Image: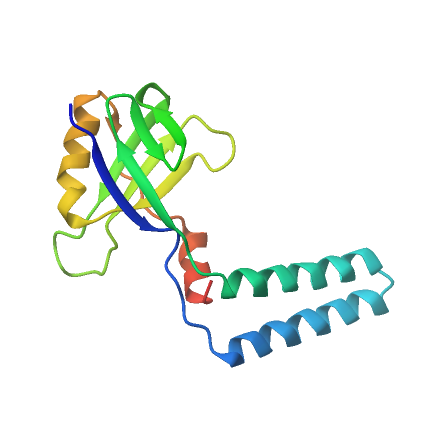
Length: 157
């Protein structure tokens, strides 16, 4: 079996206006001031720290991540997910043209934290990925993006 390689951005970059950062600052400052007024200093400090980190990650540029499907499993950067540890997969492509679904590969792995991985793919490699996964006896199970992901995208994250 040949290996299949592709790359994609770590996440979809969003252009944020200065108003977004002003709104973030106002929300963080007022929330932390309210926490301090009520005597919850730790929570106030936690809110400030969270706001600073959120602002930092908002301006950070996404990295390019390299993916590889080979005879052993799915390799993401340096991490290998053997086929035996992949419970199921789903290749999401929009065949109807009615909705704007991004082509994604969903992997349900044997992990406690974030058991479902969402990996961006190209339409070109979608069918190849599906055939490789099926040839390795990985179960195909329909999966969708979690509702929280859609909510975060609508909020600009």
